[in-house]
Image (cartoon, rainbow, N blue to C red; front, top):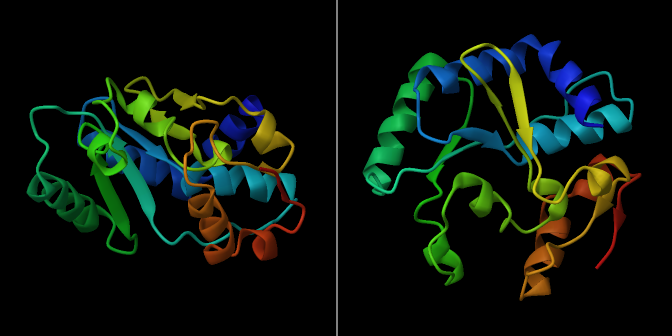
Length: 180
């Protein structure tokens, strides 16, 4: 699945444009995660010809020295100037441990591993050499098998259930299987 996903993203000029815009900001340990990548995988596996619309694009980075919401808004403003048709969500993962009452995270990758569903714990970036890198802390099996499951450490399963229902994933991708 990983190679197929990389190939599909490389052939998607819209996604490459988004990745290039984010790369141009040179943010530390920066990735585009969640639905940007997950939805692409699910669209491929459902053989959809058209991209399923995204609510937003999650840009995540890790900078312990710039943890203000104002800095995130500044980045969002720059990205909006580059691509005003996109709803950008910018979050410094160096502060997200506070939302979950966890010890501080050490990297973007660790923070991504704390997102609610294993299939959502995925991100991509475009390197300076124009290579695509993908991280998936829980691997690609759940994505490839179209399984929606909470991360192993999720304490409140109602958060998972609420997200599955509110995001309407089963309607958008009917071959998904929910497992808890």
